[in-house]
Amino acid sequence: MIAKGYMGRILMVDLTERKITVRDMEDGDARQFIGGSGYGAKLLFDAKAVDCDPLGPDNVLIFAVGPLTATSLFNSDRFDVITKSPLTGIFAESSSGGFWAGKFKKCGYDALVIKGRSSSPVYLSITDEKTEIKDAKAYWGMDTFAATEALQKAEGAGVKAAVIGPAGENLVKIAGIVSDGKHGRLAGRCGVGAVMGSKMLKAITAGGTRKVEVADRESITAINKSLSEPMKVNTQGMADGGTGGGLEASEELGNLPVKNWSGVPWHDGAKKITGLTMAKTHLVKTYNCGSCVIKCGRVVKSQTGPYAGEEIGGPEYETLGLLGSNLLIDDLGAVITSNELCNRYGLDTISTGGVIGFAMEAFEKGLLTVKDTGGLELSWGNAEAVHRLIEDIALQRGLGKLLGGGVRAAAEELGPPAEEFAAHIKGLEPPAHDGRAKFTAAVGMATSNRGACHLSGFSHDFEEGAVLEDLGSPALPRRFTPEGKPENVFRMQNLMGMMDSAIVCKFALFGGL
Image (cartoon, rainbow, N blue to C red):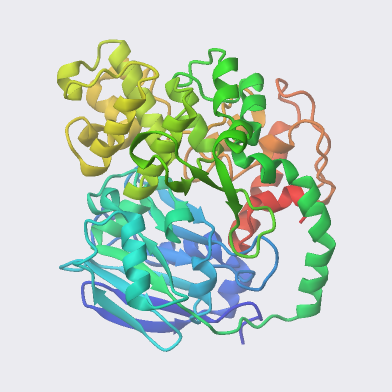
């Protein structure tokens, strides 16, 4: 019998055969792989997808929750998407928060495995009673927000949706999956949205209401009670400024990407786009994921551009870095517009900012010309050109066809000179953390199993002065010395692997979880 915290069932969907089956989750698998990314990796291995075309019908797309999901434990309503990446060609894992995870698990499942390819656009409707493959022609071509709103009307109140936008439909290799719509979250990394699009799968709706049984409800309540105050106090800075609240400090450390990772100072620009500036000039309200007390999500009022006057999602730290400083754009309103475009089209803001920064440097060096760009002047700081490029990437127009394959593929197409400034690790564009600023970040990203990832190790935020006694991790020397750094990354990668499998938000560490 499987342990409490699990629903004990795996939902299997074959879109080619239009066949839906359910199988039991083995107790041994639960104990060995836990859930989330760990169990997802096991399911991917079992599918024997290693040699498949990532965008072919033989690849599998896996959505996995963990034993802590929907238990009410703080910061635990998350899901992982696991597949073979069309961007990197290796293991892909992309995590997302919001409320979809809890609704899916309460349908009675710990994971969803999708294989095959539908002959026409479809979506999955999952409830307590049944799972159906439904026609999605009416939603195909909609942006993620419009599709979410329409699907929620069709499926009823209380239903949450995970959807792709035009970028995923067009098989853009830096496309992600948006959950919860307008003020939701994005499983952005590794091109998981393109895999979903390759299966002609527009969305997955979930409306579960079942109870998740736990072994000791009183202990969960006690843990939450003990963490409530320190979680709020220790993460107050994130509540005030969002994840972008530390952007100015990041620039001072040399951690922030500037001008396609060229490392130039950008003090004044960082002040203009930091999360604290956004809180003063644009913030309307904050929001949280399920079971979270931090509320790092931002709702802002756009003041310029196509969404002027509208309340839209505010950019996070990674987005401010890659679509702001990395492109020398110090106009916060312009970065907010870039973020909105990416969310609507279903694009990873990290990879999008990374590949546009690469294109700007290629333009500066003469490897791209206005003939290649369709007349766009890809000069540093040109926000209008960035907005046009985001659309071109999502819709696969002009230069967007080249950039939609990511930095590595674009550099290979342009030739060896371009590879000199092509920033990627194993084909994945780096997040807004420069490995030259903290040695643990460099080691962590170099050894991450999905490529450039700061969250699979997360040791960079604990490098100076932090002591993780439970891991046997001592206080580390200054950031530019190698002593103790590999050992710390090793310990933190093990911890992060557990958290990604359980699943718990990494920010819970700041609150003492």
